[in-house]
Amino acid sequence: MVAAARAPRQNSRRAVVLDAAARLFAERGYHGTSIRDIAAAAGITPAAIYSHFASKAGLLVAVYEEGVGRIAAALDAALENASGPARLQAACAAHLETLLEGGDYAQVVLRVWPRDVPEAAARLRRLRDSYEARFRRLVPDKHLRLLLLGAMNAAPGWYRPGGESPREIARLFLDRVGVHD
Amino acid sequence: MVAAARAPRQNSRRAVVLDAAARLFAERGYHGTSIRDIAAAAGITPAAIYSHFASKAGLLVAVYEEGVGRIAAALDAALENASGPARLQAACAAHLETLLEGGDYAQVVLRVWPRDVPEAAARLRRLRDSYEARFRRLVPDKHLRLLLLGAMNAAPGWYRPGGESPREIARLFLDRVGVHD
DNA sequence: CACGTAGGTGAACGATCGTTCGCTTATGGT
DNA sequence: ACCATAAGCGAACGATCGTTCACCTACGTG
Image (tube, rainbow over all chains, first blue to last red; front, side):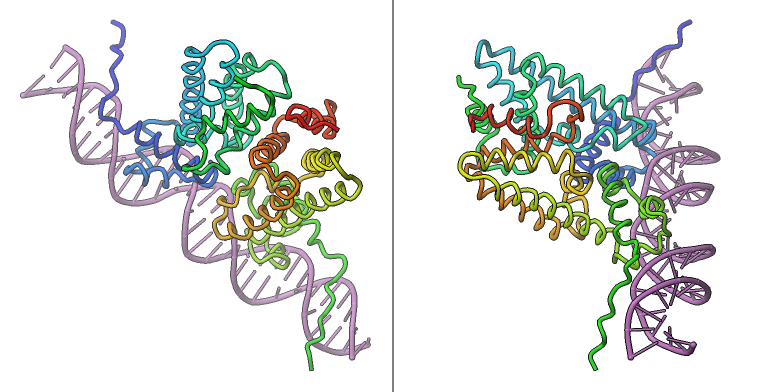
């Protein structure tokens, strides 16, 4: 009697669209990317995007969720294998690795501000805060936390592969603020 | 024989347009702001903007120049009145004061990335670099500089008037990285 | 005072925007 | 094998984009 919950088709290109959107949002920002750009990058028709996402803002929210999820997952994984004073070290290394080598999803979270998309601002803000809350538990001191997060989140602007690794950058930053392992 | 260089009219609204553009670019970003938005905020017709600026990108460059100029001027003024180990303290306080209380021009420099506007990217990058070069002379150590600049430039995202003053924030940050007066 | 011009208006240009529509295709469950 | 339907296509919708055009107006100069 219950309407059979039909399983979505497997070879769907939803993931391809999401990847293309993440790459373009990270490169050009939200307003600098058009639905047609994303569709072309995904090898699809603009109209087909709306079979997977309700709107451009909804597509951004999906990218945001994936981005925050990846950063949070990297943080959790790093904290499982570390204890004591090495926890902060491991957390910052994981954060930087996700931002600098983890691809486009994480960078969208930094690049696109909630206020850029008023219709989705509340949901985006909630996603951002959910991660910051994790970090707040790890670094209770307000100004140390703002110092570290600000510096790390600016890294995609100057990082070049081939120089210091994300892990080394984390150690150099933490040395500077008097946290040693 | 030489064409008489006619003095531009005084009651021009060029400055009004520039102010409106700075405010909107800082609030909504470059692609999130239309020429019509700026014109309406300046109490003018969209077409009239083009008697003062060649294009939307040219308008952004003008805002950028003013923004970088204000940050650099604040830095110079602060350094004139300070010497010895207090120089860094004064510089960071001036930087933060301009960002947090200096209005919209400075925030546009942080909000709008050169890559957002490919046609003006080279000029925008040159303007950004001209300020970073001043700061590089002040803080030769690469990672300390990146740590401080990253943290300070993220401040507009969380600063709320009524809490610590920009000058106090600068002192708290510098304390954390082991710089005391 | 007459005149040239910077500054401004109102309307429109083609391009592109997010989104919707009707139709076709192909897939998975029965 | 059949059919309901998810997925995708081609085309178009109205709205808005940056910019340009022809024309008007008011001020500084000779």
